[in-house]
Amino acid sequence: MANILITGGNGQLGQCLASFQALYPEHDYTITDVDDLNICNGDEIIEFTKEGKFDYLINCAAYTAVDKAEHEQVAAKKINADAVKNIGVAAKLNNFKVIHISTDYVFDGRAFKPYSEDAVTIPESFYGQSKLLGEKFLLEEQPDSMVIRTAWLYSEFGNNFVKTMLKLGQEREELKIVADQIGSPTYAKDLAEVVLEVITKIEKDSFPFEPGIYHYSNEGVCSWYDFTINIHELAGIDCNISPIESKEYPTAAPRPHYSVLGKNKIKENYKINIPYWRTSLEKCLKVLVAKQ
Image (tube, rainbow, N blue to C red; front, side, top):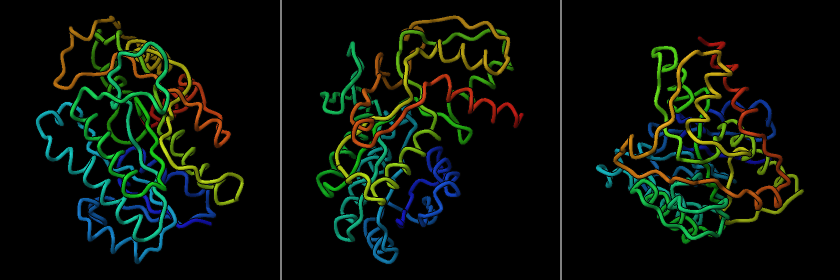
């Protein structure tokens, strides 16, 4: 039904999207990473998408080393902002829709209730600034685009917090984990399935393509400390976890203390049911523990 191009195919979300091809066989998929398609090269992406005649581009490519971005600002901006602008230019020229993945780091984390899609953005890290700039570039160049902000992404693929806590929990008797940063863990497979579900609903004429900014994370909230307790409990790991404050674990890039995303728009516009974070964590851990 749709010809879909996925960029950033070697990342967590890209690999999750690839794993769902069999469940959505009605679509044609072209999955790329930098060796196949360099989105930092504007001419290259224009030519590639012209030849491919795509209906949608799902952009999972990103510079995600949050702390390194403070010192590698040119590299972060090139991938998170300039390359997204290239995608927008190509999308306008070659008439395809874009679904771009962004982040909760566009907010300053000082809220006391979930951030709505139209909440004021005040990123405090360069990573967040570069991602916000990418959002703006894309919507300026190709208004017929969706930006989906997500948070605390993990999966069976790549490097992420869940896999790190499994490893450290097995290696150490005690861990100290930040307890004053609150958010919603997001299973990348849930996000991947939602993206493909939205495309499928649009292609079946069940729902219109409604561009703009959306939020997606799993339901419920927790701290990194709570998250770690649950990871170890579900994986059967015996490790003493102690809560600490952010000031006891300084990082180059400031983290939002509260980055819970309000998800009403995607739920209402596309009738999406979102799983509770612990339910999805349990699914992921069953896969990860079986691999050990």
